[in-house]
Image (cartoon, rainbow, N blue to C red; front, top):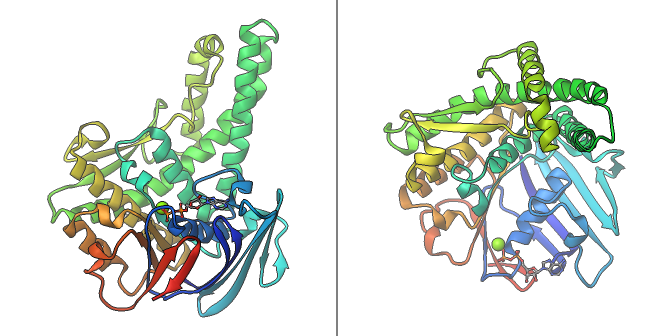
Length: 369
Ligand SMILES: Nc1ncnc2c1ncn2[C@@H]1O[C@H](COP(=O)(O)OP(=O)(O)O)[C@@H](O)[C@H]1O
Ligand SMILES: [Mg+2]
């Protein structure tokens, strides 16, 4: 799949811009704060219905305007799709081939995106939150059902936490917990099961990537890291059983803390290289290689799930990689994955051969050079 063109109106610092993209590589070159990431963000927005860097939609609208409009042309399976997104105040509307979607969720499955931004360079050594977000966003893009589970789980969690505090303060009886416990266990176990399933696939792929990038020196292994008693192959029922048991054990403590301390919102992924947990003990090189391996595995994972490669957005990370990782990355994407690369200069991009387009980004305008 690839995005053949994009029209932006009143998006961030762009007033009006019409871009025609290369189906392989597109370079967005410009100084800081000119609008490079904004272009990637607009692509992410039209693909997923949301921004990758803010939850507040109104921030996306040009400060001088009341609304924004994006229109993209997606080529997929030799078919043409016209994607439109408009935001007027808080009102978001998405159309595909002129048909209005009743739910943002229905956008899933058209334009799939993998983004690699500076934040992802700390995917391995950073907080568990980053790794949860990584796996959640990935599964959400291929499964509207998962997206639904995550949002429902979030609501149940909030309610349960409120109730725990009320019980602690003697404002509610303990018996009320059981209703929320049941929902927490049900939804949480489904989420964990989905994560385990994709972790198995991702694990195989990222192991392969890590081995290739390090010339066979490093074997990467992914493991689901949780307080529950389970392994990568546990069934949904086994997860439920363990969840139930542990929740019971923790009840008094959780009331005391006024917080739910067990469940997918607390879980993590451990990354093991040659028997060492590199989240804590890896060298920076190992951590970066593993972050890259995970992202490349994500591309292959999506290819496996949807039958086509997603498009890849590389925000300021290309120049952060050393020559060998860079050339491995280029070999991987060459001629098969449409890629958008932002950089402040062309210096690090000399390894790029073949088909590409360069856009010069300056103060909210993009000029093809
Ligand atoms: N809603 C907005 N309206 C107008 N300008 C904005 C808005 N949001 C951000 N900007 C401007 O966009 C620029 C940052 O763009 P960005 O794409 O992040 O830069 P970079 O080229 O460094 O990636 C800044 O100059 C910022 O002031
Ligand atoms: Mg930027």
